[in-house]
Image (cartoon, rainbow, N blue to C red; front, side, top):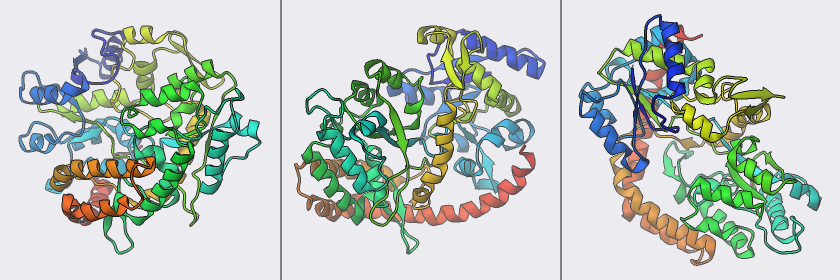
Length: 490
């Protein structure tokens, strides 16, 4: 069974590979040869995938892929298989793990309904949260904020009242990367997401960046940036990856950010480094702060998945699903990602403790099969019980905004593909220009005036057409799921 591999250390002939072969052989009662097909780096990944798919002699039995535009063409050419019958027979672990909503985004309505792809990695319903330095709160005698106004006052205190006690004004209240997800506490307090289409009361959808609430939030951010409360590194595109944010956090000079829940795991690399540099430092998560209308929410993940697994036409779908289903079991997932308990790790007081270093883990090929039905539940052993509770809690804190956002199912979005790059370029120049004070607040009105001319009208028309279509598809899917999937659960 050959599998396309993009994640992990990409270690050939690894211990993890041999373990998977042994597990599968025991379960299937026949020899199994697992053949990883390692992809190059991200810049060449899609080229490699397309080359593999164009040559049947090299095509993996199971293809790992991102959100490729070639996918519909592969279906039309018969290069990938409908795996619904195989899931019914051999995919119970997979079907029980993925929610009905997640599977909708991977369902094709043609010919009565088929599943041609599985999600490889679906983030938790709410994978991000508002983080605060608890030790700074305690030192300054502050309470965790509940409203946006209270939050802003805490950020000002973190900036101006020497929370690290070094006698210098060298701390920032707020930081993050150069994406609007980092500014969620502000935008969501006003019920708007600038990166998504928002459902309107009249039944239409509009691009969030064009809604008037955005202008109000930009004005607030402009004031905080001018005061020195917002870390100026947020405004540069150089600060657009996790490494940069981790470095800032590790420095111990920031008091709050909107970031991944996984930061609260003691084993998270940035958290380990932070504690080494700041022994008394402590992060805590708070519920979403609310705005003037009492609205607040955490960022909802669309639950679509960002990468996919396709069973190609080079082998039997039944065989492929049996392999994937075993990889999806909590036991085999843990084995492939963490090794053997007592030899490679231990669980102590509910906390994961590695018994090997990262270099040793890479030599073993641990996480070689990363993003292959990646579990985010109790099988993810690195999550502490407290972190797991927060993930569960965030299902409810994300719901208010989940109900407001339209997440598109369609891959075929020609208007979006044609115009969104130019629109986002103007948007970034405008929004970050306003935040940094290089542009007046009125620049937002100029952006709105340009939006339609830049292709925004076509994008909105396309989004509304898809929204109506997918609402009807959802009804078809509900009936299909009840008949084709429900009888095969549990």
